[in-house]
Image (cartoon, rainbow, N blue to C red; front, side, top):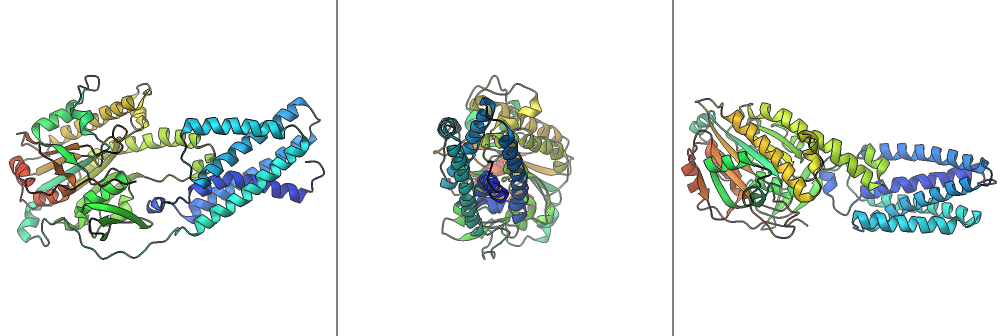
Length: 497
């Protein structure tokens, strides 16, 4: 860049840096508003890492250009220019794919990008004029894509929240509990354990001699075990709210930070919040509930509960901003140490939450959901080779967790009556992406080991009603649990796209 004024070099370097940052900015403005719901999506989260990356890259780009211009013409200098061109072409290619909303598999994206970047560098490297033109083109593209990202982000209601819709909870155990019901609830409690993506077929309908899910089988033998239980939806984002609202759904929409409306089958919007949920119907109110979960912003949705959340479903952060054009780097970071910590944190907190003595303890764990990195850092075994082995590895960890819970509940005192509910929010979708499959639903009143099987279809959407009826003393034995399900409506699983 000899002979180019310093201010023009600075503008070109800034454009190149904006090209890098535009990939992150464009990822933050998806067509879906789901990202906003998780709450960590704010202007500060957008601008701070972006500006930092741009300043650093602009400085490095100007220093690199100055250093290259001082080198005498040589093969090494030409190779450095070609490598730089190929790298920046790859960054432009990544940004354009994000801007266009193209969904390419990782192998296809890597293959096409590498071939195109190499061809671009080879063509431009034939002359110094082409190299200069290529960098000007990439710089201009950086400005254009940043403007596009700004327009998209400008139409995105960051840090905004819409008014709550007026709707009532449909969990109907009792509108106003009596004094006697409050008294009964004092010695009764429910532990509702949701294993994310726990699939009944993988747990019970295969030999699994190599996995040995002894605790799931032991619980099934001494509980009320529903063998054809379906979930409200096929995805955690919508299934968990539907379970806690007790309302079949036909859609959802994100209304703002920590705010999501579930749309029922009649088209009525119901806010997923404390007021409309199971927690508001508890005999002791939301304060009598404890929540240990991940993905959903539980502690913001249920502010009066005793809540601990490991992580949200959105992880926009400094690492993503710095590695956005190279998505595989962020995936490696996200899947291994960060998500592995979620499992470790949950395992550490789980015994204390269960011993808390709350009327309802709702636990949402990330196992056995893929990837295997949830379990891998915690079992010390070699990394699995395929998705089936990954899932079975996670199942083994889930079985260990269940075993610890069963051992802990064996110490329940004679004055307590505890109902353990073990189920899932959806099945293993890798094996059945378009057809709903059953999930485990096991209900065990601790100490009542007379196992029973419900072999007809049931819908887990009614689980909240069962929680309330147990706490109010209307369901006192496993025989009554089995009869309780006889007249419950079968609700079709809604598929979230």
